[in-house]
Length: 343
Image (cartoon, rainbow, N blue to C red; front, top):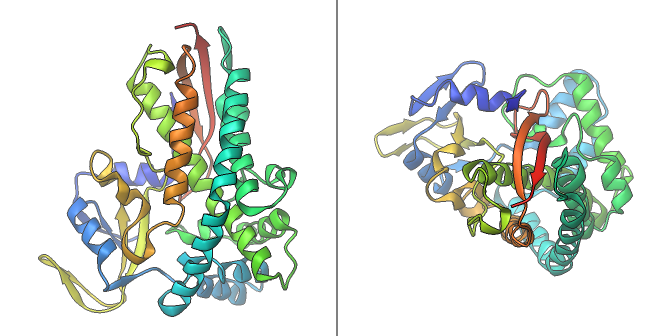
């Protein structure tokens, strides 16, 4: 059923019996306890890693030109702390809000058309390739104003620029160069892009994959939980039930205590979001000042998708799910082979 599963998911499955442990290969404490995860997410004593500094360090140490990747991070809230984070977050929130209505409208029209064409009795196909990939391209293009053909030519990427935001093995110079090239390819982004251009590319490069993979995994999980049930009779959850992001990372900005847990300033913490699989799913989107700006749009996209799925009396059987190679950030389903039969 599942082939080539996410490397990070495999890592976590091996440790799920532990509430907290030190991972030498990650150089971080890994938290599996949902109470600790929730408290750390909301604590003012933790902040995100300033990833632009990491990229600049990589560029200097490896002698690479990563200027485009670094410049895009100027316009991504998750790459900043303090006032810079607040300023970028405010601009990004306004941008997303202004484009949400047309984005969801485009997404719904595409979902309706793609599902009508794909869900034919006695058919077999890759639902990622034929439905979810073009759906994501449509949504990202409407949200970012980048032409569909440009987004489509760069999605999904074999090496993801979003990996710059995750705990991982050291990134090779080849992979870093590919990430930088992806940023250039997606937006045709000039070295000195305008703020609007850079924010568009940041939205496309860093927002598409988490939304896409979360929608795919949520769909797969719901179908597997309802074997032999026509889509029209599946009681899909109102809220997006599954996150493709196995973890988020935080840095302690001061010595502090979380219940009886001693935290040291400067320590790195990996918070496993799978602890919320059956409770408080909203924490998939983070919490506090770093709450994901894409949460409302993601939830609306899920509702639209499930509503369109429920128009069909077909039964979908999941045959095989394959994940992208070398992905230490997302549980990214690259292919989902399905068969369709009459209900």
